[in-house]
Length: 115
Image (cartoon, rainbow, N blue to C red; front, side, top):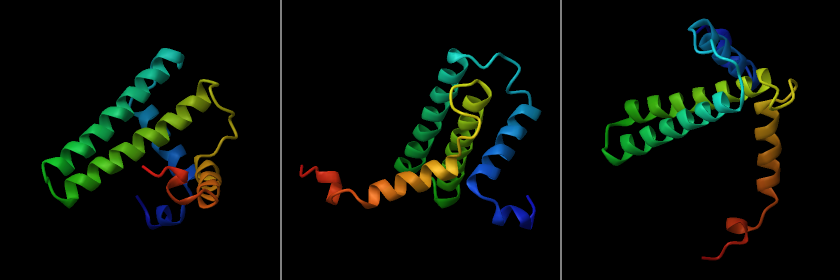
């Protein structure tokens, strides 16, 4: 990646990640509900790989690589859901995260859960 990538927002990064996945042949099938569900399962498996890297003390580089894989799967999923009509084409991961952060800032300590 170039120095320009340092200044890209999440939407731009998501688009680039998805374009790479398409270029590498991961979108030869129809983007239907089963395709999206399989992408969600793969995202879940990446989270498990982070868990295992931490649990087995595989070191910072490995942990961060697994976290990166998780983010890549998530960003690709968002763009795939756009392509498949599951979310609006204008939907933005960047905007969704900003909106959720504002919502979370207004919540009670531990979101009101005391135990």
